[in-house]
Image (cartoon, rainbow, N blue to C red):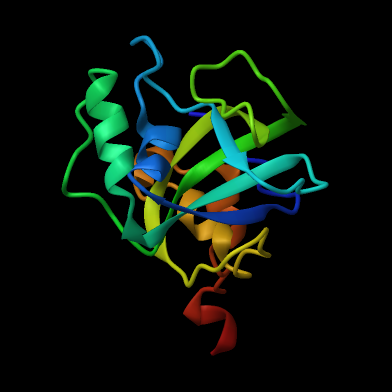
Length: 164
């Protein structure tokens, strides 16, 4: 699994469900299965790791659009959490993706990575600074597959006998 650039900074954006789910968990094997464009009226003036925060509200049009494309979106979605990360690689107008709205700026998203644990955070409009502990959403919970990032995040404790 690819981890986001954990040693670098990231930005966060709040996206309504089911759009957030389609960005992170959409099936790239299906036509239009993964939402690879986020349409916004403004330019973020940023490229790099972008955390996808699932907002606390839904967009019924999103469910309708996914159904129209033959993609069954789950109705047991998570809200108010960091769902995962993507790389924001470009911002254009008129992108050929079926997800692109020709009347807005199309944020081009690649490398979706689901969070390994859901971190509850407060969202807002605009491009946000993520919480200081955002990397916890991407550290492994399985002791057999821990990464260097998990080890760096763990406190180092001296054995008890050192202090006797």
